[in-house]
Length: 238
Length: 356
Ligand SMILES: Nc1ncnc2c1ncn2[C@@H]1O[C@H](COP(=O)(O)OP(=O)(O)O)[C@@H](O)[C@H]1O
Ligand SMILES: [Mg+2]
Image (cartoon, rainbow over the protein chains, first blue to last red):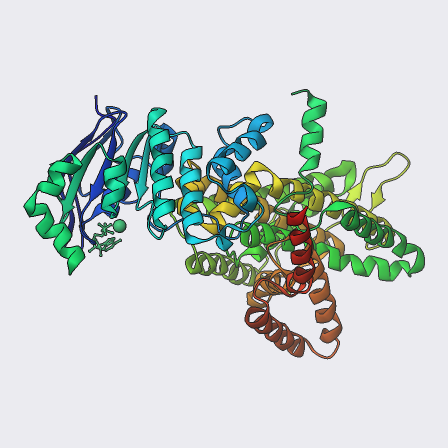
């Protein structure tokens, strides 16, 4: 059974049809990338899955259970977690504090500090634990938010442009980090522009265009598809 | 975990990331101030001591606003609504029940409970209706102004609850002071040295209790909501419940101020819920530094004393000075003047910590 499924999902903003009849299914353990030009509706699709927006019609199922109208925090508690496109870290709080808030409701107080230290090491932020999160570099902010999302030990992790603003080295390290999480059993769905990164991590790729699923397949199939090159790579050139 | 170790782990929260003062230096300074406050009645006229309890009365409301606005990020303009509800409730209850058998203390609890209930109902509609930002301020301000208007037109004899006449804009008076039942004679808390110590003790309990609260897991979540409510929700927290709980606690503290003030002066008027009264708490906590309980208290006491001394020259001047003070704070030190004054020192300190 798919861990995540959408059926005929639709969303309008005024006259703008941002999500159009999207039928999408994600298998447990899959590492899937969502690509498409700017404004294609990728972030909106995430927000529908998370409950930040409610769809006009259609259904969303998590683990076979309908969650179309569930509150965002209820979906999170079921095992979904997200890293936003714009890092949503708590800027005026320390790095350590950010992680504490992500961890405290499912980690026993006795092992909380241990768990924070482990995550800090994993994120390579041990030196910056007392730093205010707002003072981190852009790449570090992205990592911190990935760390907060991962801290919930989700079964399904959504990542909206996880490597935006990162150096190639940081991007590669992020890819390795995500692969490690995937090996441990986490299902991942990532919006990404960096094709090298998509090639590094994705089992399957979905192309979104004007809110509709335009193409689906492996990275090789997608890059070989001339129609995709026309809409997606064409846009990058322009 | 044993109950003893649970108790110590709760006590440890008296210091933490959400409170500025920590370490032996802070606590020795704190002890000196507390000792001075305890010693003060020995060196002053008991009439003055009783009068100055006035300043303490407001600090509960200020700490409540610090919690709601400074920590929780929700600007409530309606602290005075809960102040007034509890103040009037105390008056109505004690005038009807009298001051024997500790009934004034029961009235205090009921009056504060009533303001908390009122906050819970109002807060439910606000936070579960996802009202935030400026609109939260507008709605809470409207509530206190409506209550003021309502109470101001209760002058007629038909406006009475039991023996208690509401008295319109003249205000309600002649309610008994808080009275502690004691073997060998009740202790009536007139504005006097005893009331001073009782209020000081209450203040100490609330201050330390709130420090523990803001450094607890609950406190972590409310500052996270202040920083980014959507992120907090996407970590699995039901943001609305945390906002509501914060609002109820902070508003109940305003209610406590209302009861203490009414008992202290045996008097409460609709003006205590009016526009001027409603804006003053904002000035107190903004000037000191609303994001910290200690700077809130320092700022509130300082502003209250300046305001009090200026009032001698006419309250309209005092209000202009308050307004100017708020504008200056917002422009020069938006986080609060006390916080701005101590922050260079704090930065140096945290750098040292980083080097260790
Ligand atoms: N809250 C909103 N209200 C109105 N229009 C929106 C809103 N969010 C996104 N849009 C519009 O929907 C389209 C898709 O946006 P988005 O999902 O962010 O695209 P992507 O993430 O693929 O770049 C864009 O044209 C954007 O302007
Ligand atoms: Mg986007």
